[in-house]
Image (cartoon, rainbow, N blue to C red; front, side, top):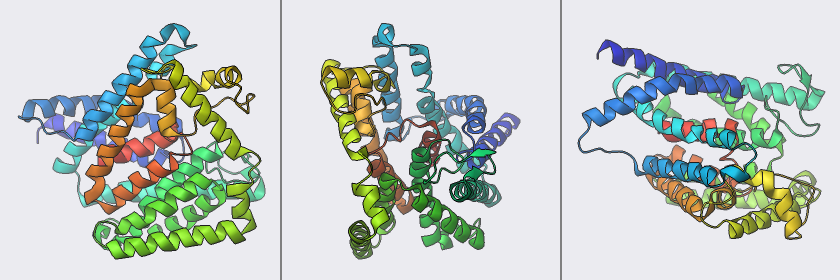
Length: 387
């Protein structure tokens, strides 16, 4: 190992520590991971192309790069119609950094990382996320978030340290899939797991997921967890799926609070359908490259008024990953997004925890634009790049 390699391995390690500490605590602090990843990712990208003939790159990484290009092209082709095209163009940085991270993380795993590094990263992730959840739960139950030094972001739903309860709910659902997987397969990770801390994180963040009252996040978790058994225990997978469906069904039928979340949430279901329709009409008007990446929300009110769709006073994203890409990046962008998801799903089959994570991402992404929230993207693309 030469001196330059060692420096960039340490920079990569630092970026992972930042992600572990910041994903659920601070978006601005998490952005430091990108600052660190830019030089190290670029260095290892160049190193990879110098050292590998023929090149062997995960096809999902290539598909992510193609998707990112379509996002960029969609902005360029709608430049004149967008209020702030430069800002939208810069938002594609998450995908670029994910690609750079793939090279940096893989060199780090192969040539530098030891159990002590993973132990610090993992336990820092468990601790920081649990602290964020505890702070949010205190805010929910007392009305004041002690770490944000301000009123809770919502009177009846846990928000963690985020300012948006849905962002927290869907993010903590993905986190809980990972923690449940670590608990189930704890023997595999005993070299760097502290058992009591893992169990505490499972309990604390499980409460956070429950009290987020995010139905899509609940569904993503319930459907994904049985996939922890899919690869090697098909029978247990089927039993787990049936038990999860039964518990969810009985809860909706007989628990008033759960029933209200799914069936009686003040027109929320109807509003989502309105956004789905508006996204479809946006695609019909711009079928190739859409309205421009992340530009559907800015046009959603006007589209609903134009086509006489309901909830015309609400602007927002499509509340669906696929439909958001359809509206904002057109048919080409949607195709690239679907291919990326399918390839990631296929590649993750060998690792039960990761395939469960991907399933949760796909399911919850049917009712929320999780591939657009910066907080959630740090987690989703961080897991993608690392594994």
